[in-house]
Image 1 (cartoon, helix red, strand yellow):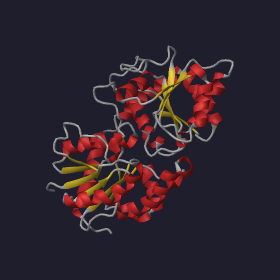
Image 2 (cartoon, one colour):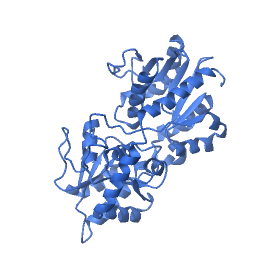
Image 3 (cartoon, one colour):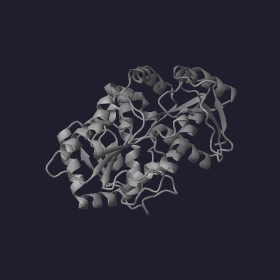
Image 4 (cartoon, helix red, strand yellow):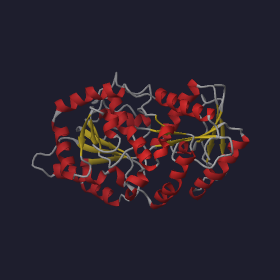
Length: 384
């Protein structure tokens, strides 16, 4: 296929340490390596410039980035720019695909359907917006991508006729090549970044937004029960998190544990990587995940994983994790205690983690995405 002109909703790049910001940045790095297409990135007034190596990318932003205008720009301004740029394909990397000019194809990535599967864990505004716009976006798309088979099944359950347009493009670890990796990382190395090691004692780590879906409240309750036991675990608890909502109770529970818990906010890639690498294990007890990038990062670092047995996490970690019922505080407590106490279990999971991590790559993500973009262009304008 000849060179295409591809418009991209690049708003996630304004939030580089969120999961979808990480996804789009790494995906674009690879797409620019493997294709000769021309890319036009559209944003909402944020002071962001593409990396220097994105030399051929055209970047357009609105003059204002007010949250209330965010969706309006994506719905009305971005398609107008795409038409002026004579785009062949419009790529929407997160859930919303606007009505497009006649003859322009659309590709949409769905990371999860939390608004449908776990609506009570979302903020009211985001839940209402996704409930209203996601089904229509799925119907408009010429090609659809999901990050796991689990999410693909959720989309098909919502829109059965989407099945023939769907393909799974798994994500990959977000650690950088020059940072610790599966071949070189020692899980007990001290962090090699500006963030100091949070404890003299061993620790386990939770990484994610402080919001209800991440289930941090049950994890803290389980850990508090272990701490109150006659034989408490040696491991402290580290929370890597910034932002969130409906989390006052969670913050209070962490504060009650005093020096047993530390919180690191706004960790960059190097900080996060070093802190996860130094942990005895990572805990991801989420009620639902569409992929679970912290788990992928832990796998790549050879850090053992304790994960929820729901959503996409069993698909991502496979045999490289110990699984827990995220709805059961007692099960979380039992498995957490086992991970803390059993060094042999952690060693076995670390070995399995490295093997599993080798099965993921951003190059593969980009190749699948590129195929979707090119297939959409080949059948341009078929859908309303």
